[in-house]
Image 1 (spheres, rainbow, N blue to C red):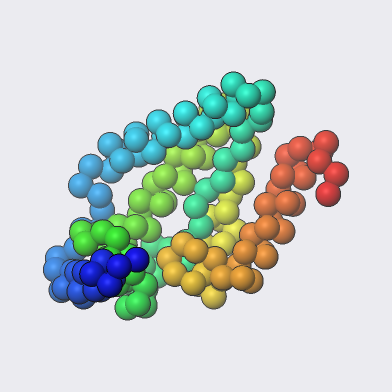
Image 2: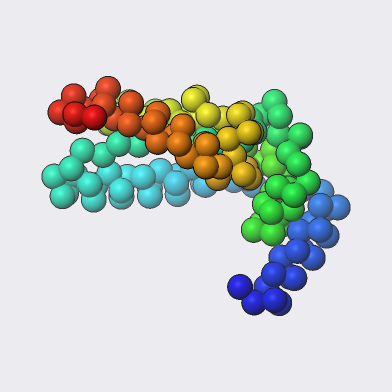
Length: 157
């Protein structure tokens, strides 16, 4: 990463903190449709190769009830990626996409591993809004192995 890019992201995120940030995507239905189109392409590619697709929801360190408590360093990190969305908007988007994944999986008969239900809101397991710490990764791996074993008995863990 160049010094210019690093400074630009840092300065931009500091300035963006003082703007009126969006608490939702301007067109959430369009964003969800684009997301689901990518999920459908993934499912088609897996099935074309003779595989069984499995979906997993997104887990985040904060949920709707705690989105306003996101620490400043995480807020600035998010703002360095997108200077328009508040933490509340990020969380709301993940909630919407998780609901869409669950519905899609149910309609298509695809297992959905609910990382959201298991880990969202446990900020001690995350280093930022959505990346796990080492302990979070260990717990996520154990949970994924357990859920895959429950969905696919042929897997002998």
